[in-house]
Amino acid sequence: MTAAATVTGAGRPRRLGRALPGALWALLLLAPAFVSLASVSFYPIVNGLYLSLTNTSLITQEQDFTGFANYAQLWGDAQFWNAWWHTMWFTFASTLLETVIGLGMALILFETFKGRGLVRAAMLVPWAMPTVVTSKMFGWLFNGQNGIVNYILLHAGLIDQNINWYGSADTAMTTIIIADVWKTTPFMALLLLTGLQTIPNSLIEAARMDGAKGWITFWYIRLPLLMPTLLIAGLFRALDAFRVFDLVYVLTGGGPADSTETLSTLSYKVLFSTLQFGYGSAVSTAMFITEGIIALVFVLVLVRQIRRAQ
Amino acid sequence: MNDMRSPLQSFAIYLGAFLILVWSGGPFIWQFSTSFQLDKALTSGSPSLIPHPFTLEHYYNAFVEKELHRYVWNSLVVSLATTFFCLVVGSLAAFALSRLNVRGRFGILMVILSVSMFPQIALVGPLYLVATNLGLLDTYTALIITYLALGLPLVTWVLFGYFETLPREIDEAARMDGVSVPGLLWHIILPMSLPSLVTTGLLAFISAWNEFLFALAFTSNIDHQTIPVGIANFTNLYYVPWGDIAAASAVVTVPLIVLVLFFQRHIIEGLTQGGIKE
Image (cartoon, rainbow over all chains, first blue to last red; front, side, top):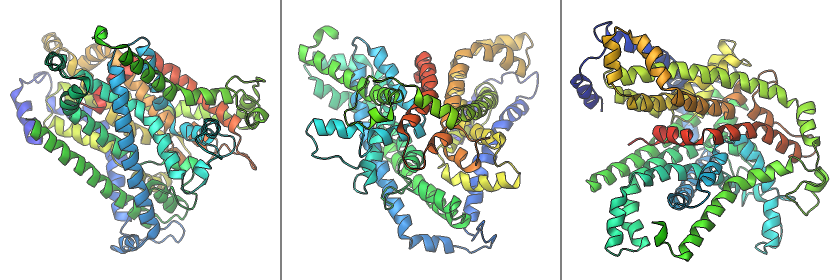
């Protein structure tokens, strides 16, 4: 990638080069952003990696190099694997639901109808709302006693008695997934809509002329052409879902009975409740690695898709 | 294509649109309605969308007992400062990448983008130690420095995308007139990019306004805690004050919604540029 960029850079005529060395200006202008990202993003990652190899604790004030002891402990830590599986399940379920429902919404918005602007505007509401507020809001909507969701389901005859949504280990994770899907799907739909709009209309017109029905044009023309957009949007969504913290921390705090504990909430507790910065860093580094693997899988699928398309 | 639709298709589209509207607006409308209802009405077992009797009690509780305005002030200071620095640093970087001959500019852009994908929980521990050593815990500064770095990737990407759409003939003309590099940015590119600056500024503002994890870790009292932390801690001793929470939610969300609706077209364009660029 760097090589390609250098080639395009060299191919262009030098702009503004005469007044002052352009390279010097570029360095100067990029420096603040570089300093900011280096100190707040790269340094902590490297430092975290180091901390994960120590027994750093703010309580005992120890900071000795212990090699892979933390990782060995992590490997046998049932709480870690519990959180790992919950995070994977949350990421999988919410990304899948958000992509599928988002695609459905995008297909509706693609049509012209009265009030389309209003619907598009309303879809930004869940996105703009602070996640903490969303979390509290779902706490009220899905409240076990007076929640409106229980009221509606009960009166529609869909359930016989109130469900203790996030207060019971069986349904708590589902409630959190519902809250995440609510908050993120409309935005996903707007991203996919712009993807749909880039598909040339002539292709679909031509298919219609040949007598293709709506489903056929969707399945054989729109969906394949939308695939790269779907995969990229899905990748960003999955990476974001994997970091879920606010929703869980505020709605259930990881409970009941650790049934909604995710990697972020577990790391946070190890770091700031037990103050074991060494072990906590091992948890977050393991998370970083898992996230890297997820990204890799998506990119591999994406590359294959693009190759096949060519 | 409208005329090709059968009545059934039209019906399906309008039904779908209605469902999307209910999905997006419904929960918040209920929350908004809740904020004007008495606790007694909320727990009566027969919920009603129209508050009856209407009360401002929850707003009184939120501001007088819970001192919501102090969290709002903290959030305003932090978010506005973050927005300002994000726009300054981001536009310098985006300008350099778009207009100066930077080697490997796409490589740099990809690195910047991938930074925004780092799990934030992996950053919070080491940064907490740094903040402790520098005496920055319980300060606005720690939050602003952190949020600047979190907001920069998106701001840089969106501004870069916008700068790329400005015709390069302008640069040439400016160069002929002997305009310097900073002059080109300040007098020519930035004034032309005002719509994009407003959008990116809004995005940076919203992300700082909504951030929770770092605010939770770095601040421990109402002097510096921001709104999300304040609302997360909104509990009474023996019960959860859903009405008070609803009132606070309305106070911090309604202004955002108004801003977003006002700038909606720009936001969708801006985010699509930053999020999915092919």
